[in-house]
Each structure stands twice: as C-alpha cells, then as structure tokens.
Image 1 (cartoon, rainbow, N blue to C red):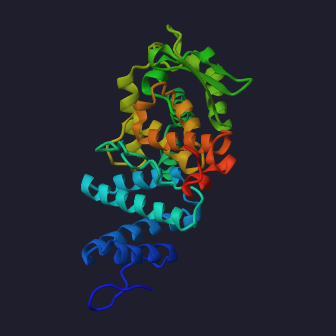
Image 2: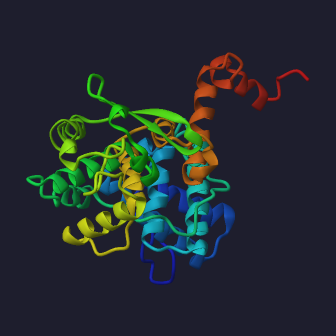
Image 3: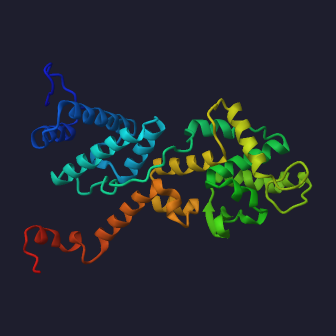
Length: 322
C-alpha cells in the first residue's frame, strides 16, 4: 500500500483500485500531500457508502452515484466540498475505465451536475412506516388520513394532485390511479397492494360518512374537498406524533417516494414517468443520470456504435479513413 507523509502512515482506503489511482496521482500528476490526503478522505466516504449498500466498486452505476451525491448533500456538504468530491469521482472512474477495470464510466456525465443548493428532507423507510401508522383507523378521520398518506407515498403525488383526486380516478380492477398533474397532463400510476386496500376501503366504507358535497376523493368534516393547507397541517401533525421533528411537508413524501425507488433499483426513466415530470428540467438532480442511461442504450444498440461495430479500436489506432 502506498504511503504519504514523513510518518509513512497510509492515508488511502483499503481498496486496490483507489490505491492504484492515488499512486497515479502522486507519480503522474505530481499532486501535493494535502491534495492526496483530501482525495483519500473523499474516497473513504465513498467506500463507506458502498459498504452500507453492500456494493462492490465494479457494480457502481450512475444511479449509485446519484444516491451518493444525495447522501453528501444531506450531510450538509457545501459547494466547494461537493466540487472536490465530484472531481475525485470523475478522475477515478475515468482512470478505472482506462485501466480496463470497468466497461462503463458511471461518472461520465457528472461533468456539470446541476445539484440544488438544498434538497428537500427525505424520510427513511422506518420514518415513513411510523408516520403511516399514526392515524387511528378506527375513526373515519383516521382512516381517511391513513389512506391519504398511503397514496402520497405509494404514488409520489404532489399535494395539488392529491387534492384534485376524484373517486373514479382509482380503478380497483387494475390497481391503477389516474393522476392529473401540472398542465392537466394525465398519467397512470400503479399502487401497491396495501395502498389499494386502504383506498378501496375508504371509498367503499368511509367516504359516504362524510356526507359528500363535492366530488373530491378526500373530504373534510363538512363534506368538501380538503385544501392543500389542511393536508400540510396533517402531515406535520403525524410527523410530530411519529417522533420526526425536522421541517417536512407533503413534498417530503414525494421526494422520499422517488429516492426509495432509486435505492430499490428502479431506473430513472421510470421514476421520471411516475413523478409526472413532462419537463425533465424540473428534476435537474436526476437529469444528467437519465441522459447517461440514454447514451448507454444508444451505444449498446445503435448499429454504428463503436461497441456494436468495433469501430472504436480502428479510430483509436488511426486506421479510420478520412
């Protein structure tokens, strides 16, 4: 293992790829000890993250790096620290590709990521479970709230979309929810079995007890549709009851929905569709990785791609005729 500094202490993580890359930076790039120490510290953070996810380095994907960047932001890293981490990732994975350790560079499109200064709070799975269990489902208000919370998390709804839902927007035969998003654009979102059961039970057994005066799915005590402000207050109330004292909102459930899908292996295109982002710039934190996936598909399947035709070697060797 390479060592740096007069005391000869190893400063890099115990990973042969990273060890080799730091040696490359020392010998070929002539980086200072302080710079090498900073890079090694950043790689320690990456390895800790991968260890928690039980992911070896060779299985890192663009989605993995997205989640890692989210992880760093949630830890409170500023722009300068984020820029250093991104530089380390870009350099390391480009080097790993050149060395033949990888066949794809997962950091390829991290060149100019458009990460927001702050990210919405994301609940852990355990926190979501605690919130979902808070409403008293023995009462009509509690059952309504449980069905509402299940929908927010199961479908990643905006609060405005939840407010506008009608009973007929849920199809119990297919388990699919019809949602009208921004610009009245329609999308269909599948619900998991538990969410389906709560929504169906609410519609069949509880909604009429509110003596509906409007066609909204979720009603207040007067039989009228719930407002966004009312839902916001309910979210904050159940969060506090669940022991969650951070500042959260209905959007927190939506962002948790997207993050947990990605952590579970969902591809970015699917998450984009489920969130109803017609304009992908609305989710800039996901866009550069979505582009990465499109490029990978193009390289894999286009008949003129280097991978399909073997033209890369010819061009590299200068044998491609001009």
